[in-house]
Image (cartoon, rainbow, N blue to C red):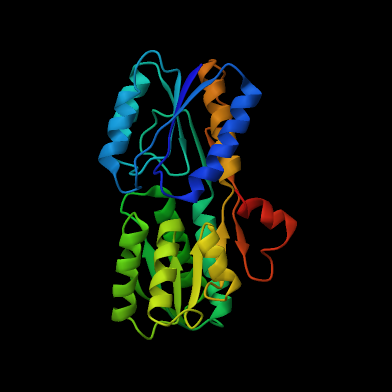
Length: 290
């Protein structure tokens, strides 16, 4: 079987974890020719669409894609499916019904988990800002929405003073984070929705001499972010299980390519809150080390 995996980007550790899960499923399945190709950055939607169109052809049995934009990728996925290619969405939501499966973290619940932790850090009162990544990214918007909704319902004395998109790369996120901190110098807490925004926000906080002063909850894990956690510049990281997502998405793609009936169109994986007190636990370490 010829199966293509199209991640959101090549510049985030998240996809290294996911590739490990994909490779495990490929070894188990046997007779799978895997092509792995994605855009350089997760805001390069045009490049991802072009890659999808390049591999939408009869000799490709299945495509697994992490959509950079849930609406703009819908028509190209529909065109791929019309050619007989089975499409599995992973990580981020995709509009339409042309894909056979969607494998993802329960991102809305993960956002609520971040908000619950933030509420505890702030003792239920104060101001927070939310740094999103790019508009149209289903997974990260779900996280932000879960965070916002939880605070509105359960922490009425916490006010959200800013909720803005920061861009799809570490550099863009760092620049937008610096501007946010300038606009809201007295903010008490910060939530960043993914690896690149968490990275950018940590750099901006340290540059401004605010590391450890603002309560900061990030999302995803890298060596840099773990260093922030150890040094108390980050007060919590919501960590997904991209290995499991990659593994289950490849299993779904193989099954679809073989014509197996779809049992579970949506397959959810869990996320956990990691703190300085818990990151060394063996079950947490398994999620943190590529």
